[in-house]
Every structure is written in C-alpha cells, then in structure tokens.
Image 1: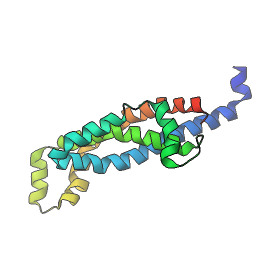
Image 2: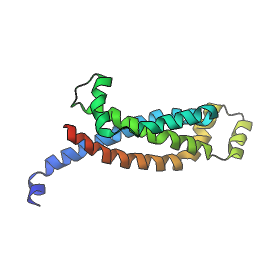
Image 3: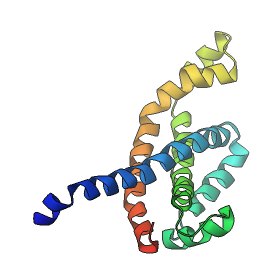
Image 4: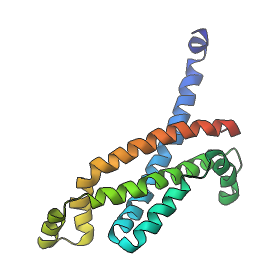
Length: 160
C-alpha cells in the first residue's frame, strides 16, 4: 500500500491514459461501424462479405497490429495514434455485425408503418430504426469496450 500512497498521481495519470486509449477508438469505431452495419443490413448481397471481412480484422494479433500500424500510418513506433488506430480497427470488427443484426431486429411492421407515413430511408433510419436498435448496439459497445480495455494493456509491451 505504500507504493499506492506514494505514487497515486502517477497511477491516476496512467489510468487516464488507458481510458483515452480505450475510449477514443470506441467512438471512432462506432462512427465507422454504423454506416458499414447499415450498408450490410440494407444490401443483403454484401452482408456476408462485409461481416466476414470485418470479422477477419479481429483475428489479427494485437501485438502484430501495433507493430504494423506505424508503417501504414507513417507514425513513430511509440506514437499513441498507432494504438488508437489499431483499437478502432478492432472496434469496427466487433460492431459491424452488431449494427447489422440490431437493424435486422427492428420489426418489419414498424418500418413499414414509418415508410407509409412518408419517411425517407434516412429519416426512418435516424428516427425509427436506430432508436429501436440501441439496446443491441449498446450490448455490442459493451463487449467492444471490455475488449479495448484489455487489449490496450498489450500496447505497454511496446512502450506506449
């Protein structure tokens, strides 16, 4: 306990860094996964390729992805942006299927009623489909958040 008492400010700083390295990619990944998941939902022919392709991204080992990111991004090896980009890739990999499944779970009579009321596809997406899909998307976000928090600790192996 003496270590904690003597280094509490350092512990809080590292916890804040860990939170940022986990949270920022979660928001970026959600912003990318929403349109990709909607595309997978609205284009059944593309769904298999998009869901499988995004799922394959999650099979890349995190340490290898952290090492390859500087080559792709042109950043330094110890840059936190490498971790943020890699974690965003993992978040997208987890959320594309979740968003597509959440939009599939919206009852057809509800979407038909919204269309009958004159809503455009985009307006129906924003005002009907997404609000009804939020519980499923939120559960996917929870899984992605837990995954991000655990995988970010691997970044410390390379010094980030």
